[in-house]
Amino acid sequence: MKLVNASDYNLPSRVILRAVDENHIAIVKLIKSRIIQKDAAKIVEIARQIQSVDADMKVSLVCSSAICSKSLTLLKNEGVGVIIEEL
Image 1 (cartoon, one colour):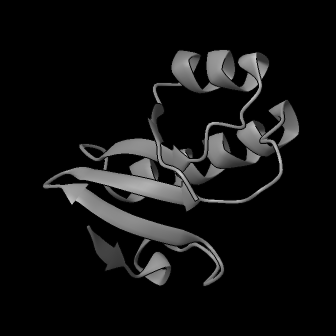
Image 2 (cartoon, rainbow, N blue to C red; image 1 turned 135 degrees about the horizontal axis):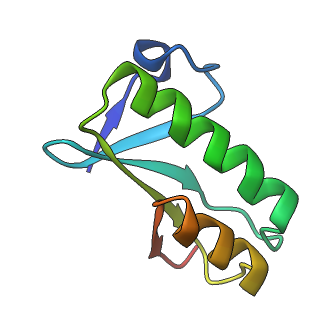
């Protein structure tokens, strides 16, 4: 997967984005700690920012398997897919 420049979507440079497919982008959060609901809310904000720039863009999260069930539900309800990768 090819890295995408976060500034193209008016995001801070510390946000890591990867092109999954044409019109599909992934937010990369490969961290050792668990992703909690507060983190998921921030991810949803990033996804909304990406879709405000390109409305047809599908957004997913690339993360390790350490994600809480409430976070998964929030992401699913907001239309953000989840791709599991090991560290």
